[in-house]
Length: 261
Image (cartoon, rainbow, N blue to C red; front, side):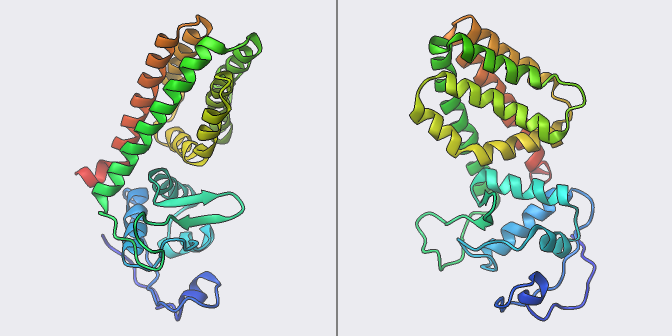
């Protein structure tokens, strides 16, 4: 990896506009090839080295863009990937923080197993989401009212709206999945999915960025909707599992391609 050297920052406070950041760091420039993956590498390395500790708030998006010499979309994609695996937490209005490392005091540096731990956490998230949404969709197929069916249909049709922006596509995707959850009429499980809203949204944003068009996703969503409308719990569970597995495999392959090479 090659970097262009710049003048050494006197302190983290100067680099990020904060008063008490004692560590010094060269400004880093990441080459344009596989930018997102390289940002991920750098953030993981900084966390593992203790430059960002569990519970620490990351510098602002603008500061990180300047530090790495990258664009907003690449940075957001990298942060989204690490949020999806549980390494970072993103909360609107509160910023992005390093997640606490299980079993370690928050004062100690993280000691993740780098690539293997990242891959395992991503796999666990995909596995957990499939298990949860299979349960929800099965209940929805049994319990959905006519108004529930119409709300799910609305979310489905939103994905076919002309000239959808990335933000609106993600919103339509969320509407579809949350409508199914609400149709389960199990408030506890709906709350579980709502708690995963941010990583699920990150998943959807990366899906929209990495895979381009939503045509195949629409077809998979349609299969889920048809099974719910037909009151076929087994068929609905099968359809949602196939959808989430397909997207999860493509997402994992795209995020890990350069590391696997």
